[in-house]
Image (tube, rainbow, N blue to C red; front, side, top):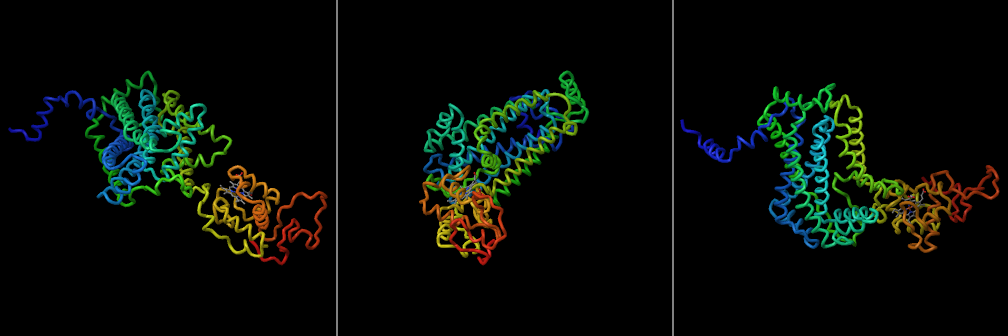
Length: 512
Ligand code: HEC
């Protein structure tokens, strides 16, 4: 009987290439534990997303111009002129999101299932560096947008690296191609994004997969079944011999289904939401911008903003080193013993804590209340009670408060920036001298305004701030020299005894 022509062609090639004899059994044909089911799809999903990024990235590179002058324009061209260019950018952006998500889930699953334990320690370590490279690609990729987010994010990143003792400036120089962001910067990041880091991923991936094939996919953990260096491999391979199934088509089928759904989801989101940016063109002259990193770096952004200043530099230096040490040492430190998460409560708690804290930090990163709200000074007015009944000097202070952009960081009646405290009732906390000192010298995260204000302007600001009390409360007073207990005499304190010329007393208009 004549062979089917397709089968005939395949066989013809197979006779010459000997795929079924040599490569197939060691790769797609290798046996996997029968109970390794849907939990095991995330690794291949990550790889599929990486492949998608390679393809879409190559297409983008055909149009993108990695030069500081033209990068932004070429993205605008892709978004609006090139047919389906927007969709390509969108797929590449959402694909990177999906890849970051998949690799995170994959790693969490491997950790919770204790799959990193003997004899798969190296698989884990290489996997961790794959994670590092993935986020490196994501970071360098957002710089390639070369919009304001990129420009400012990079500036902040460079300022951080510059703090590394001794070699900080050299590292900044190497990465930015000079002491400042310039023409060279983009070429460096382009090279990292399209050659160096993807190359590193391919190399690491090769070893990762090699180890996965050699040491086998871990079987589903069973509570009480401990990993011991003496017996594990013998038992594992005996079990695989008895009950294992070939990877293709059994497990491959599940991988394919999941990857298909994932690509569909990414495609739909990409089509509906569209590409990310570029937002405004990068311009060091524009400081009225609030740069935001892409969402997967948002938590780092929050951490940096919220760190107390005293430990900031130390943590910026120590945290990455700490992460690398902890993650690479983990399988050597707990390489044997229980694998099931029910017997490893500490592991479960670590995962929950990490997800909750990263989730919370990401959540507060989006509105970033600590960033000055750059337009608040020109856009937000206070309720009338905050102006009513003020003297001309105090009114002048109110205007200055608006005009000198104090409002960008300070709210009044809850309206305005949140970098500094709400000043609606600041007069109850600070005396006039303290207000004056705060304005002139600044403090903590508040810039010193001494040089930007004339003495008369400081007077006006202090006079105004000193009227800000809740109804019925008096402003803070300097401690009196003669500590006479206050008598309940009419108008002994009300009405402002400290040069407060407004003459407001019991009959003053109601204030909040
Ligand atoms: C860049 C943001 C920023 C700007 C602009 C700013 N401040 Fe502040 N301000 C802060 C922060 C942050 C604090 C909290 C003190 C600290 O961090 O040490 C603060 C504290 C204060 C306090 C003390 C409040 C308290 O309850 O202790 C006063 C008063 C004050 N600012 C007045 C002003 C005035 C007046 C201006 C405008 C001339 C101004 N600030 C502009 C950030 C800012």
